[in-house]
Length: 135
Image 1 (cartoon, rainbow, N blue to C red):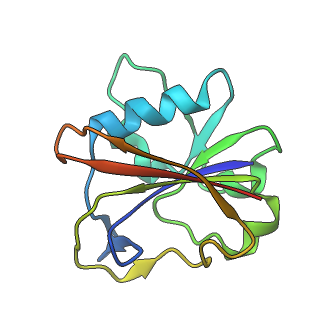
Image 2: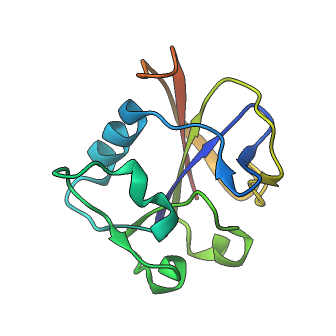
C-alpha cells in the first residue's frame, strides 16, 4: 500500500479535528503519483476534491479495506496499526509550523528509507517538500 500524508514542521496533521492547511497543487501532484491506481480516503477529505475532477473512493474504514496496490490519502487517521502494510509513504511538508494536536504516529525514517525529496511550487504555499520513503 502507498500512503500520502501532509505534515507541518513538527509532524502535525490536525488541530482540533481540522486539517492544518490545504493546497490544490499538492492534490494535483498526489494524483500524478497515484496514476491509474485506486486512491482511497476518509469522507473527511471529500472537500479537497473539486467537483468535476477525478474522485477517490471515500470510505471511513479505508485503511482496512485497502489492497496492496492501492493508494491512501490519510488526514485524520493514525497509521501505527497499518505500518506493516505500507510499502511507500509520501510525506508532503508544508514547511511551516501550525498548531497541532494530532501528529504522525510512526517514526521516520524508522523501517523506511528516504528515496526522494522534491520541492514543489504550491498554490497557497510558496514551497511544499515531497519526501518519498520506501521499505
